[in-house]
Amino acid sequence: MGSLCFAPSCWRVGLVRHLRLPAISRLFLSLMYLMTATSYAHQDPRVQTRLALASAYLHAGMLTVAMDETDKVLDVTRQLPEALALKAVIFHQQNRPDLANLYFQQASLLSPNSPQIAHNWAVLACQEGHFEAAFSKFAHAEAHSEGLERDKSLWAWGACFQQNHQWEAADSKMSLALLHQPSFISEGLVLAGLKIQLGRDVEAEKILDLVNDSPSVSAQSLWLSVQLAQRQNQAVKKNHWGKMLGLLFSNSTQWRAYQEGASND
Image (cartoon, rainbow, N blue to C red; front, side, top):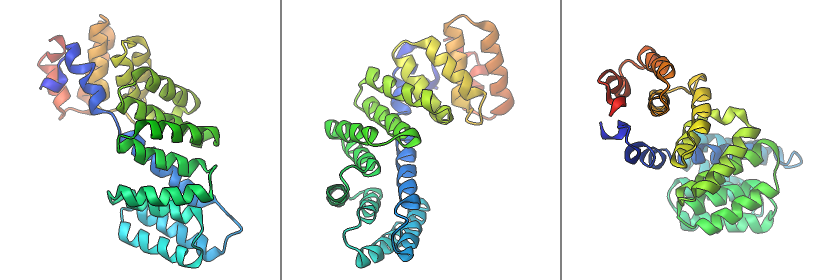
């Protein structure tokens, strides 16, 4: 039950470490699918179809088939940056970073201002621990994109700062992304944990309220709200979230801890 204790040593640091990177992968992949699905209407329809198929297979985790479709595109047009970048993503998913970096480099040389290529390459650099390279690529992606694409890069950039324990920078990027894109509340538990890490409990409370009132509510988000309400001496709010925890997640470890009074530790 140690991960559920109320002591700052348990929940201020432990939660942030636990929640660090799931969001970065999902946002990273969605950018790549967006690029392959909507780009280059002037291309040969067969090329468009194979790129779309390759992305679909990648999304389904069928990496070998995705690679086959991508190679068929490159057999027709060897200098298509989208195909090279997609091949880089597949190598990335296969845990072959050397080849992924090679193909990202080739794609970037052919399309130096592509925010999608820069973003996806940044994710690889971050996961490899090459943080300065990742930050530079995220900055490039943000500078050459707008709207949803820009905000996905901001969020992933913040997650990368978080992985490097640059808490203030992470909070700045992710908070800005959430401000632009309220739908990112599905990843709000990550940002709430970060704000708790920084001692910004009121800001964390607001985010948790939104998470708990959304389809993304979880036993973990409700339990953290219980803990935060306990910390702020908000008995009514603590009881409210505790009742929701029992109603929605009666089989969870968090509910058992609540019943045992662990939130008073």
